Image (cartoon, rainbow, N blue to C red; front, top):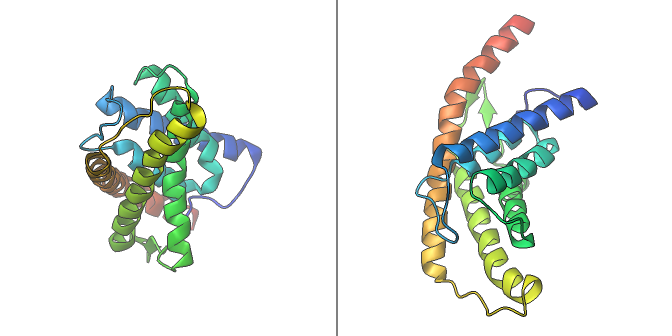
Length: 196
């Protein structure tokens, strides 16, 4: 359930700024990351997922820009096309997970003004699977065959990559979603009571 159904330009800009700040701050918590090593708790995937849950797909620009800014200012990216594709993959993964859940009619995240944790946990797992898979494709096939075919192929221990990324994505997604919804859900309830 989204916070608002209006689509004025001012509101779209505001929710994109909120998403950008949320994504950036979630990356700031853990600081620098090592290339091709998943974080034990990747909060950014949770921040992206919550942004989509609250505001819908219209915050894609804010999420993507938040990922890019995190890369430049926190993780010291050089600004290569590979970095941009990693940010794009991370921005798309939760959106794809939400759309998948809608197809299978599992997207009832709020019911009776309460969060349906079973669906949210499944969403965090699915977003982690999509994020891990997309990042693996970007860092192997796309990097080696499309972006830098003239360089030596990047060899990745696929099993280690999947284990570390998937674990961090799922734990970070669930942790961030749980913490934020414990704060946001009561605020939404109060706002509805005041409006109603």
